[in-house]
Image 1 (tube, rainbow, N blue to C red):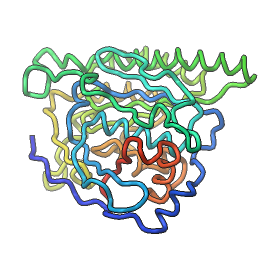
Image 2 (cartoon, helix red, strand yellow; image 1 turned 90 degrees about the vertical axis):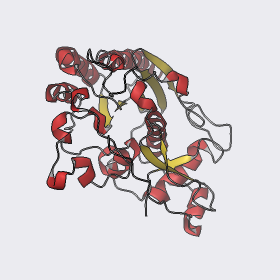
Image 3 (cartoon, rainbow, N blue to C red; image 1 turned 45 degrees about the vertical axis):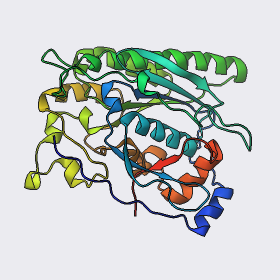
Length: 329
């Protein structure tokens, strides 16, 4: 594996105009009334790897908080989830943990954020404890042994989507009974490990897609480079990989080719959504992917600092989990 480069610098201070905007946050970007959003966090052993380069930004002025540092993939997933929520403000938020076992960690709730000056919501201090992510395989080749990677468990993703479908059906029945209408839903799936063996579940994934379409549920994937097949990792100009050429802000060590998934695995995964993974190749950290492609995820462009900081403050307060951002100029 390549040596990891030192993290770049981050903007060191908020301007007086930015501080003022914290007091009067703009409206959320989402216009979907009653939206339910379920996030599927990848808690397999690769989730503990610290290759995501993010910086804390202190709310309320002063310096820029802590300098950029490498954080774990699971911490970056949580930061990305919280960023999505404060920007779109869904009616209810749920969280699924997807390791070798799949479980609903937070049942969809409207209490995910603080209200006014009241106490913080579920996500204000939400984190995934290190003990909740799985241990690394005993060998050190990054592949989990010749028999395959134990924690990859390709069936975990269909299981997670089945759990989402079950929960959304419950919510839809409740909405019809209480409000006489059915609310829209979104599912965001993070993958920090290769979806090896997914092609074997292609038929089941197609059935899941039909079930999700019937529920008006959009599915978005946010992928770590490890989740791409070998052709995306092939050296290009000057022996640089695709991620070298896109100027990724986070350091990234390419895994062994035999640890990656196949093109067929990616196609089976891609068929669950209407997105094409080759159209917008995801960055080396989840949060950069979300913010670099914010027009795609939120339907509009926006200034990151002037929009995100006050929304974060409004939803989580300044005493909750610190705001994390990719390094920027």
